[in-house]
Length: 222
Image (cartoon, rainbow, N blue to C red):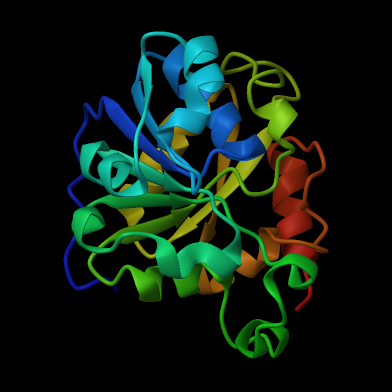
């Protein structure tokens, strides 16, 4: 467990997003649509995000990764796994951090601990951020579906997404965020079980309702 519990507040209004690729950009649009202020950063500098910020509107602004980490009540880390060592640590202390990552050895290089099934990508981020609370979120849905496939609560066959954390409060937070985006939530359990919803597993990037997701999680093999 992290050394310091995350500050969990019922009203978190600013989301920092570190990483402005397909997932980060889609989340910026979705959070802004749901009334959050968004501070987004990439590795190339705030000036390269002017088009995205203009599209998202006055709820968004571009910043450095340090600034996004400091500004966010909650923060999304959505950078390639090989770049998590560059994620600022100090400004994320005490905060809940949403991890969207997956391991692609073609992009990230081979990581022995992952190849040998000794850890998970989210556990690696948690190790990098010892005073934050990491929670898996939005890692097994195509970016284009994040803002287009959500439906109101109670809709028949509503799409479900998985989450995983060592913190029940962080799971509750992501469950609320998923609902705001239009998805049901299924809790995988602690970060050590988050492999069940990553690449090459039955639940990865397929559309599934709650029951189907639960079945796919149970079918996962490591």
